[in-house]
Length: 475
Ligand SMILES: [Zn+2]
Image 1: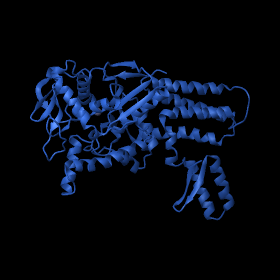
Image 2: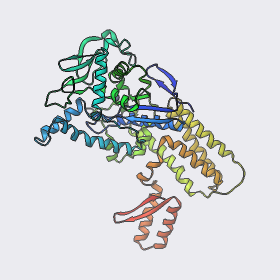
Image 3: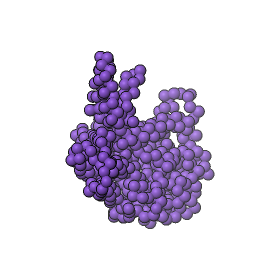
Image 4: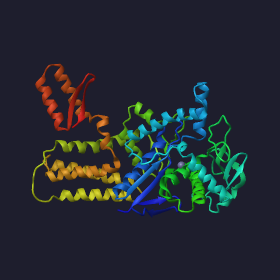
């Protein structure tokens, strides 16, 4: 099935063409734990990846790790000041500072069951490729040196601003920006290679000691990994300008045209209708939420439930709704373990409903990743399947049970909830049976304890008795 996506560059919905789709998603800057707003963007990248594969495309997906930029260097400098004499130089402190956050990021991706990316390039491992791009830009007249640094000359790129449609009237050519981030009112020449002193984080180069600018990193890594342009580039809307605009400027000028076919951007996450910020006290990392007892699959469901192009509002209520929806999904899945399938001949009308639900689910996602409509298909199906099981008095045809399982697995190819099920333990009603069984055992009522063990086994769980108590594990 052909997938269509809204392209930020053309402001139009366009088909994704080809069989192998190369995607690059801007990843985290590892100066802290990633927050919930970041994870909205990463879950969106995951929905894109999974949808393309469900629709029959092959996917190669890279997400970078920014481990050298203004923010990480600031953190490394503070770390070095805190531990005088511990690090040989600031570069060593930078590695020590970013590594735990990088590992934490990988763990967080796993927690939310985000598919493993094919490539996780770290900026510090691609310095030669970045210097090569600087050389190309200098040779073609798109860059110039000033005070030991190298800058991009935006006046030279006639279509600069085509992605963000930034107001070039305010173009301050000849004035330069040294920092990695700036806003739309400051369209200036930006730094490609930043001069650094011997005490700063630096690499040797023909242009003197320095380090890459943030924008340069992604352009060089994409070229190095994919050996050419890519099909889809994703990121949060806040990256459209200047980051992605500058990536286009560098890559098209340095390597030739054909950098990115499709730009897809994900909107912000709000918390209680406000922008998430540390100062407002509404700033959450994934770890904060888990520590509060929030469940990964509920957070994942919440993050994917809104269309990526809409702001999503994180509230206690929204999370409860997500929780209820996830429970419904799990509940049908577990119910299938308890039914008694009958070997019957003949076709069932319900099989057709299953096939239709699968097809509709994929079709809604293929239409610009419309997760709200895809979820509506899922919930309509959950209702229909439960009604069917009620109707057949828990004795459906074996082929129907298989088909319901197959349909839930089909949904799960994108929702990715079932793999999170064992980690979160078990539905409350089964937990209650376990408590009852433990109480029976403590009271030496072994007959009752065995009955409950059997009951749990029928529901698809076996009891594991350990030194730290007993718990349930999926069979
Ligand atoms: Zn980037």
